[in-house]
Image (cartoon, rainbow, N blue to C red; front, side, top):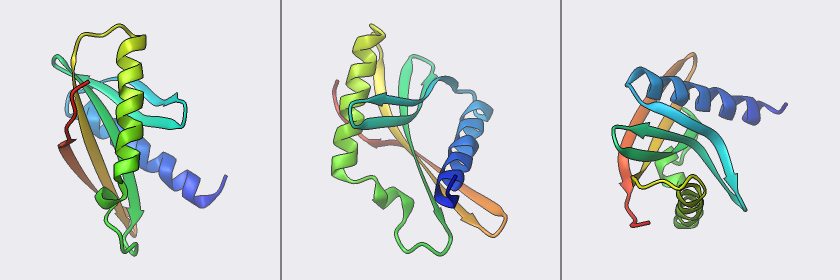
Length: 120
């Protein structure tokens, strides 16, 4: 597997464990619908949390949060809507971004709650 694939999987694993550590229940990982993929779907209290994980090496110029473009957001919203319909859920949905930056052997995790809003 290519380095960027390994790096992405390692970052998603860090985000997964971070969410568990702060008390979230993980419902799904890498859930796909059409062209969209939701990295992590979690539950916290009565909210469904759609999590996009963005990871970069320290040397990268663009901030991971800036990498969640409007078109990526539209795909996430569409996939989240389908997830809610498929699972027949009656929940509020929140979209979070977990930004992970790796420098040497350390990882910096930033959790941006309610990174963008939409009504499903």
